Image (tube, rainbow, N blue to C red; front, side, top):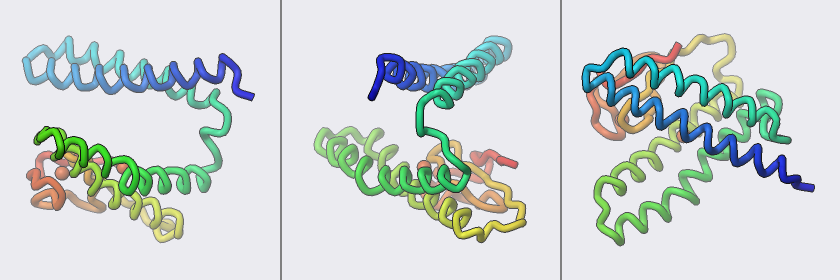
Length: 166
Ligand SMILES: [Fe+2]
Ligand SMILES: [Fe+2]
């Protein structure tokens, strides 16, 4: 049975997740507007909202499983985004001639395939004991293993746009 609290946890998780991302974006804007201290504040609040969101997620039943289950779920979410979700967003953006949104949705759809492949590798234990660094394109979200490419294969961003994740 779904209780009111179950619903409220899901609501609070979504709201705090959004707030975290929004504050991170505000931090980047403050940074580029030369307000480093304000940027730091936005980053701190973004971090705090993420703490809230993760706390609620842990309290939501069946959302976090074993790492094997989580890899499987993450893989399926990427496939779903690629095949079910983005195509209809792309179709509607095309119909409305919303060029920037169309480009963003298309990049995301293409990038999800790569994310799914990375999870597949992990599930097949191809990663094994190997330590792999990931480099994430800050424009489209493409993930490159080992090193950042000269140009992002999805959006064409230059190497400097990649952020290293260790
Ligand atoms: Fe993804
Ligand atoms: Fe990219």
